[in-house]
Image (cartoon, rainbow, N blue to C red; front, side, top):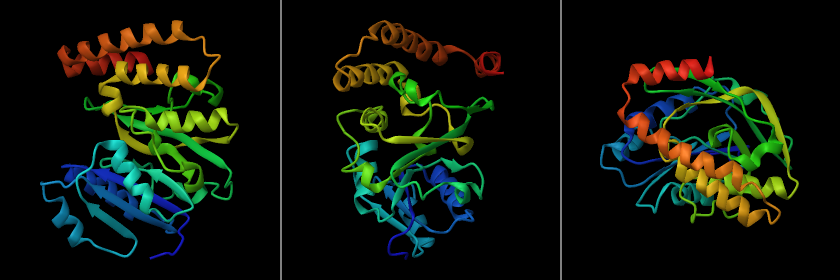
Length: 257
């Protein structure tokens, strides 16, 4: 085990052994080897613990115990991380390719590094998500937490668990308002499945972003931006529940291609 690895890769999982296998395979294939892989399992009953025992190795640390939710599990992983930098790659997430970490500027220790990601939909549609300019971060996360590298020092005590959907945004937005330097990489860092917790509850996530803006930015005057998005998000979620996959796929292609 590396005493102080450059990077701690933290994965949380619960009853998602197939997704976990996909993530572990992606991490194991990395050509960059100055990392530790921390896996926080929420006491799964799908064979996850037996699987982790069967592939035990020095650079992989795993804990299986109940947690209080996604961000609580992430914070537990952060608490035992020894790396200078941290990235959260949860069960089912993958790095974009085996060489991607070799070009990350980890020497920029006072910055937050972020990049693009590839989103894959259940319909088979794929697209590269390119972040908005960082000056528009107030609108919400236009990049995924799986494409963000943050130093352990900047992570502090971790995520504010009062937020159920966008605690990652709250932490990054605080640093942005404090003047921390954000470095944008014009390459995809990860592959994620579209339709995560925040995606399924988009209108609730948008409402949390709205509340965080009001709390952290006293001069915030953007209610006109968020309220229509909250309403639109609610309607979109309901429509997706009833539309056939072929129609959703066609709509996605029309929107993003």
